[in-house]
Amino acid sequence: MLEGMRKKAKLVIFIVAAVFILSMAIGGITSIFINKPYVGRIAGKKIEYEEYSNYLKNAYARYAQENPETEIDETILKQINNETWNNLVASIIYNQEIKRLHIRVTDQKVLEKLKDPPEDIKSIEEFQTNGKFDYDKYQDMLIENPNFAAYMENRLRGNLPYEILFETIKAEVALTDEDVKQQYIDKNNKADVKVIFFDPKKITDIEITDEDMQQYYEENKEEFKRDPMCKYKYVRIPLAPSEADKNLAKVRADSVYNIVTGGMDFAEAAMEYSEGPSAPQGGDLGYFTRGRMVPEFEEAVFALRTGEISEPVLTQFGWHIIKLFDRRKNDKGEEEVKASHILIKPVISAETEANLEIIQEDFYTRAQEVGLDSAAVEYNYEVAESREFTQESKFISGIGKQEEMVDFAFKKKVGTLHEPVKLEQGDYLVAEISEKLGVHYQDIEEAKTNIKRKIESERQLAAVQEKAREFHASYDPNMYLMQAIKEGWETVEGENITKDALIGKIRNETALNEAILSKNAGEFTDLIEGERGSYIAYVLKRYEPDMEVFERDKEKLKEDAQAEAENKHFSEWYQELRKEANIEDNRSMFFDI
Image (cartoon, rainbow, N blue to C red; front, side):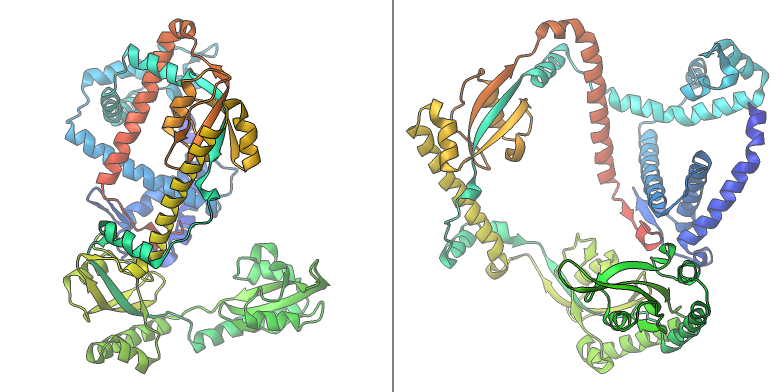
């Protein structure tokens, strides 16, 4: 067995090396040489870039080894990244709980587990006799092979703390026979129904005046109480290719243009040279009409003759070499073309980045002297303003995830400039605190849309309840279904309705479900008034719990119910710990997730 593992070593090393190269491309080649801020924080533990990068490389290597025939594409990379992050979160949370609960692994516990190895060990061919696990062969290996014995001991010592933790948490749940019986009854007490749904949305003649909204605002003013808030106004100084960068890209584009006009197949050239997303498809953009592309591209492509290749055309995305393949009229009579392109993107030079550093410093210095608005006018920059944010906010609209800026805004005065912030994509942000509000009430003009919607919903519900009462009082039950159709009320059907089931668009109305299950087949419920409408249900069929089956299968039912309850409790326990861990996830600053 160990010899077999050694034989595979070269393959594994090769895969790890390949994935390492791949991961450099994912994280960016330069990321190896640049000190980056931390990737995240989990329960107070800071996750550095290098640490997380190593976790990812190992995860990529494992995936490549386990799936040698599968190409690792962008979707799989994101999946591996998310799984790695979630596993890291779980590991830190579990380890903290193991420490808090003083969980220890004794030698006796290890010996007990050695007698009943995991399933993957039992399935090893060397431990099989006639297709079944042979304990004697396994025991002989433990005695005769110290390396295997050490591997098993280390593995069990590593896994046992988690097993003990999981068992400890799950042991907090203990179902009684009565609990299991009630669960069985709730799951098997069912009905098929038709429900007359008196839908409030069918009431459309609701008039709401300004006086109504003002009255609602005054009577429910606490609904509109707001925590202290701040705003920033800001200037974004973009990192964009300079004219020199564009000219260098134009040289490359001219070279590719000469290649494709010199005889190279356009699709092959696109696959080799294009830096656009359509490159793998040979640059094919399919058919499109006017208005679908940026103006410069559109003007160039619609001016081409079929089969003609354009000289490089500059757009905001870079230089495009375009070939027109076909023209036609679509079903609407609009002209559309079929084209392919090769995109050559300008590369932002180190000199351009250095110049931007100087520009942002100059702008910030000037903004300190004359204020952000005046400096923006002088530098011809546009000033934007964020929406209000609270002290608990993680994001600032228009700016992004900048928790330090949130903290700064609540500590400093209006008009204070924040030092320039370099954003993930290389842009710089210069921001000034523009507004601070203490505990306050939302202005009625801002709240009117919500107020109107709430008043409308309340009045619709009240009106439909009145109509439902009139309906209920006016007809005999045997006329309900027919009369509901005549009056335009919707009938919603439901099958196998239990105590907690959803009934179509009605969703969950506990009182309605309870009323249904209190009736026999062929009976109507009384009128039920719920939060989302009123209802009268007709029971088509009833399914009563078979208590003989319960008694026969009670032990298995109890076992299944206990396992389900344990898993639910464990999941809730873990989710609560995740909330308390105050997880900060900055992966998007480094990886495409």
